Amino acid sequence: MTAQHVQTKQEGLSATKKKVGVVGLAVLPIVLAAYSSNGFSIQGIASVLSSGVFPIGFTLLSWGIAAKIGLNLRK
Image 1 (spheres, rainbow, N blue to C red):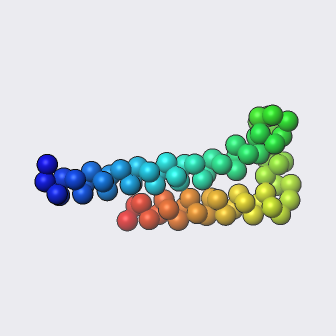
Image 2: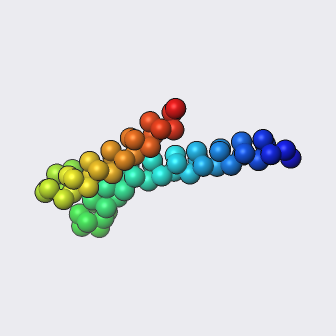
């Protein structure tokens, strides 16, 4: 294997890790809201995410970071 093949393989792995991070950041607020609303209740997710400043801020921050990382992956 040449140095170029090793570098290409490492770049592919880092892109995959970033994609997993983007998905994780996007899903994290939803999973936490589902867990906090009576044990993984799907019906309470919207009300938990919009119930106060902290959940709304956490959701927007998480989704903003995920969007930024996603846009960097496209470049």
